[in-house]
Image 1 (cartoon, helix red, strand yellow):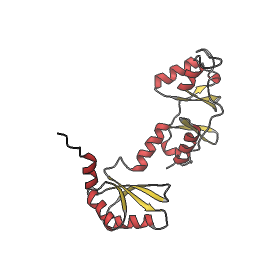
Image 2: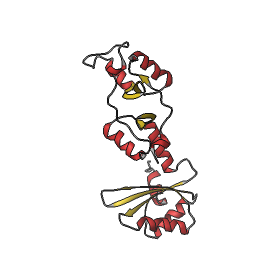
Image 3: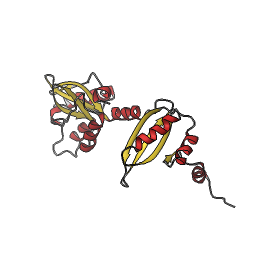
Image 4: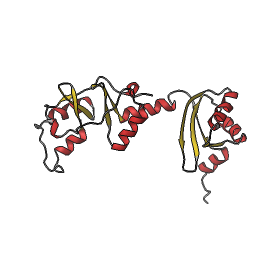
Amino acid sequence: MLVKEMMRKPVLVIAVGATIGEADQLLHSRGFRHLPVVDEGRLVGILTDRDIRFSTSSLCSTPCSAGDPVSLAMSSPPLTADPLDPVEDAARIMRENKIGCLPVLDGGELVGILTGMDLLDALITLTGVTKPSSRLEVVLPDQPGELARLTTFLATRRVNIHSILTYPTPDTTVRTVLRVDSNQIRPLSEELRGAAFTVLWPLPKSSQLHLTSKPWQP
């Protein structure tokens, strides 16, 4: 999935010469948290509701007023993304830099903006939870052929896979989370266990009974 598929467009912007008060009013009226700042169409900064609160508070060494230009409160230069960047790369940049959005530039032109909410939408889409499906989580050895063994097992039982997400663990295994179109997920999980797969979800019936049972009290 690429940034261009999840970014918001067209982009609401504010001119570098606008006042902090004007920017604050614009953010509140639209329910937004981020405003790209432009100078004659060129991106020069990012202004957030947090920037406004800090710059006008006593916590700032030189507090601004509502009549000051947004250039005194904005972050510059802004980090940006390209429309053809993978969304996971954009997510990594946002997490590493602890920022809530990335303006998207195409050849220097501002064409969109990617926010944390857009990344959540991407996660929902990638996991396939918007389709009727069941969740299956399996631990696989971190070696070639294991994922193919799992998908082949499911294919022979005519189980369609909507999504697969994997991530490594410290113990050199790979957690594999699938969304499948089977509504018989518990019998399927027992078949997997019988074929020597380590299934984390769904839990065996005995484990669920143990988790939900309450100790008897006189």
